[in-house]
Image 1 (cartoon, rainbow, N blue to C red):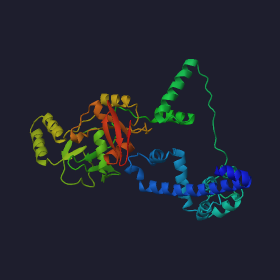
Image 2: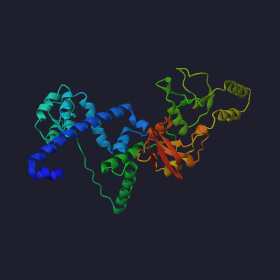
Image 3: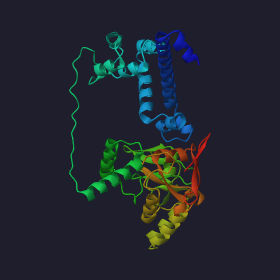
Length: 382
């Protein structure tokens, strides 16, 4: 009713004026949202809500797609160094779309030139001016040559074409229903060139994990350093248990860890080694090593293959599209004597796996009856 009243009494000028005011307010709001998104990313807010990435957090909480989130954060970060452009955006002197384009090229030393050059331009004109320019370029600098593109034309028989369409749809399900054809092609290439053997554990480094306090050490750049305990907990879920050894205190800085677990049973191990030197069987020391290592057992190749097949080679967390770097996780932890049964195993991407062991995410239920994923303030069902 209010809009109709304006149209009848004030004409098109009032309508245009109102749209300009709303557009200016929208630009200010977009700038404000960008600042808060940037702050949320820096503070790691997504981890407290059980989200594997900041993009997942923004999508789940606010409905933003990945591109929107990246652009808003990128612009907000750039505007921290471009005070004049930020001021124009906040007072409605330019739209957020114009500011977005200018932040692709403007630097503090070139900011004034770009603002003066684009002051009366439309968004499309600004896009054309910015195209094929590098950050730090001036409006008068020569454009870079266009990026080379290639057209691929394949002539396929009907049966091969049907197979190609079927494979494309399978990949699209893995990476998301909204994926473009270029995204599908890129994923196919990545899967062909970079997919690891799912029958082997994802961790190919040696870690020393205390089975009493979960402290973890790794060898890195020739030194043994302590890493977050969540690293060791993930390795316990999806790693090969080499055995156990006794260690007093922390590993020496110049000593590489020998196995995946250590225990305080120095006298027992010494006695066993003495028996071996005197001609005793090595089977005995292997048996006691397994006992000292506690409940930790390596998931077999056949079990891993079955779990990955059931979970479609992707992270089981609802809404997660990660499929390349995926671990096997024990729903009932191994230190709590959780078995390697298929109904106790699920596949998680590295990010969600880390969030779970860090205490930001919890999984309830079983694959056979349904899984519920919980974070601090909400829950979503698979």
